[in-house]
Length: 202
Image (cartoon, rainbow, N blue to C red; front, side, top):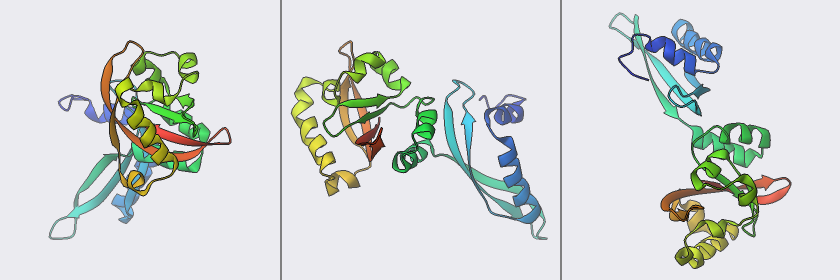
């Protein structure tokens, strides 16, 4: 959103999916000084992508203890929410969120067979969904990295402490057109269609 736009307040409100939730939290803060700490979904104005924000705010008073303004912060917690959904195994909610974001998501079994990818994955990798579902995660990397990827994947399966403590790992992907590009991969665990699975946020 252009910060100089005269209708910025209306534009911001149009992005929030549940204005009543946010308005209630804000009203409780202003009228009752109740802590404001709320998660809410937005549809991003420029590209229509769904994101999840967390808002925290407090009242600011003057010397007479009169409220002068509300001061707060907004944090994009989409990645955190996705990881929570991975852990909670809520497939419907997981699909709802991952299929509307621009980050790539991939789920594989413990043999590396691809079980699920979101639309962003197909778009960026230039594969159809059918092509991806017949492949493995090892086919997504340059040939010179395959041995390293297999070693890393085995560490993931073994839940190596070093791997689990790392927030993300950098590798390269290669798309259907043999274009090579760097990625950061965050790993989590869960089940998919009642099968133990590895979730990757890319």
